[in-house]
Image 1 (cartoon, one colour):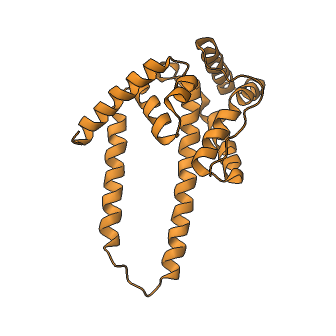
Image 2 (cartoon, one colour; image 1 turned 180 degrees about the vertical axis):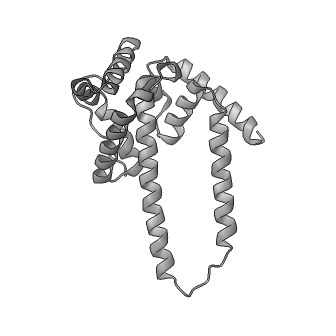
Image 3 (cartoon, helix red, strand yellow; image 1 turned 90 degrees about the horizontal axis):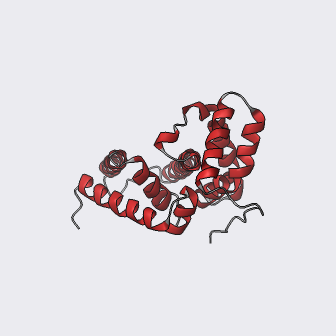
Length: 199
């Protein structure tokens, strides 16, 4: 069962002013301001670590993923563009990508171990065709996500890949719940149309 990560006593930034503050801290961090980065870390670590914990589940691995995420955030901070989305969503996207990479790496290692253990025993199905089909499906979904607007992609990514509820997405992005629901609905319709899924 997944354990919830308890936040610290300070409320997380969620309003427009707080989003502007995070964007400013990212901009200052991109110029090498270590104190700005330390403040950015303090304001967002609960959410970044919480997301990593939700995805990788193992506490020690989640800590490593969070550290790797902040290292990438520090290195890539100059690439943040406020016009494309909120600072916290940009940071959580980096953290989610790192966490997903960690899960894929662990699954790949487990699969290698299973294959090694089963040497000499042929699979009962065509492994190559299933792998190719899975990769093609994954590529289609990535292309479909790229077809969404930035705000739709933020909401869909946080809800479906981050495991957040609509209310949590609303809090993370600092927008009303109704706005999140609208973005999700419009995004899902667009994904359905792009992927050619019958309703």
